[in-house]
Length: 322
Image (cartoon, rainbow, N blue to C red):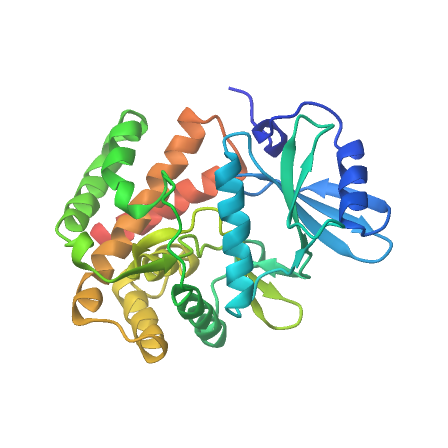
């Protein structure tokens, strides 16, 4: 099975040089000096563009996204900026639009953002320290207070889809791992999900989407899977992914308490949310593991990133359920 690249996600086959040239003219950011495709991620095709004046990131939308999906995504980014979330600033075209559609490249659409100097926690190879964790939780609270109920989009990695994901990938999972997933799934299925407080949720506060800027700030990237979900889904992803490290000194329950205590001071949680967050986070670990199986065995993304998520999920489940 050949490895897929971000360019395979586009409804366009050809050289990116003229696309980048036209993009720079459309956004009036000067002539491009250099550009490179970001290999991390499974959704769209993200390209770093450097001009004589500045550096930018162009998000070129995947061929699976409809026009409505793209408008939805750009609207969410604008609302996040308005709410004071630390997110790369959006650039508008000369026609005062956030979205640019390249009619000479099969109509592919894109948005342009300022490039933030810094590194994601995946690149840093560590989890946030106590101060950084507090800043991440502060950003989560701001996101969850955004007054926007977007149309629902299906995200196969989202925790509420645990049953669907399990049925899809169970044939690829080693027998030694099936029992751990079934136990995590059973605990999640005991949660009264529909009765939990719901709100706007980023849904992907992972090591790849939380960046520590060179300016010391924490930035939140990639709102592509944002939805209206139980509020604790945001916290569950932070616990299961962002705070997971190899040879953890803290258990999943320990990390759950740290996140609960920090978030509750900014955006008070109900007793029911506090009670169910651990099981929700455990399901999040299972979803990371199963999602990586989907990417490797079904979608053909046999990459270093996929292997990372496989290790993260397997280690997290075994550590917690052994």
